[in-house]
Image 1 (cartoon, rainbow, N blue to C red):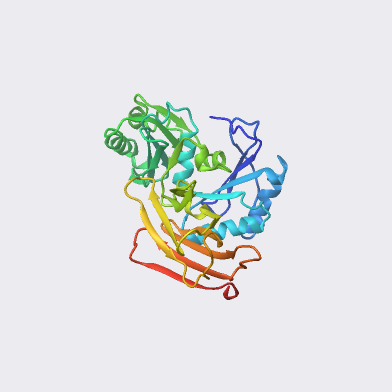
Image 2: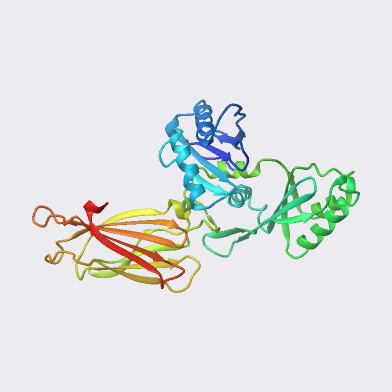
Length: 371
């Protein structure tokens, strides 16, 4: 396991059950450690977050805390609800990020030595009647590397008392592991003892590294707390990943170029940026949306209707960009004027770009007093 290598106090919070599981890691610790907490009598997420924050402050200053929360549901409403509750509990602004269970496991895997993920990696989570199996594959031919996790499979293997659990599990492993080379397997919820799992144990361990552990997702979340996607050598692709670099056509030194204002690779709900520019020609801004998966860029214009007429270079604009969804980009442009000579008109323009359905586009403009 790699050290955190920073002075931050990292925390992973697994909120897939009623009460969260928490671990933490200081800059001096090689691995995340479980933070034992009693949530008895705590009502609601905000109270639990407040209890977690109080416990974390024993290991570092509040301002140094970065937390990553694992959620069972990654819908927009749920994400914003949990983040709001965490900040209401007192977590510092911009110190909390969220991720799904697949992403958190991928981060756990990618923080292991690279011989672990040279080939396919599987997570087998043992239950009473079934095994949930998740595969992770890393494409090392791209820059950065791309790590992807398949949706979990449910292997119906029955219980130990049925008498054929070992045989059925062995057949599942043989079928799924036999199609692609597997370099490592992580097991939770079992000790895979030789008495109960003779056949399947041999099948799982054959020429592979096998690890038995618990709380892998929360440990992966802890390792990634406070991390920015641009600082790591791999990219995790999921439904929450922003796939588009957002740029705006501009001119520098007499040469036209696309200036990137939002970079792909982060979670869409974290993607926001603003910049100021000076309008040198017609009241039209041209945006470029370039997918990190390749292909031609999507180009779209934004007309600034009713912008007051001014000399060339005498109009400053504030451009604000954010994503309310993974393929939905909202842009707001505000007229800032140009000093006392050309005061602001208080006009603003808004436009929404649906990057998967370009025929649907919403726009509007008004005065600042309408907000």
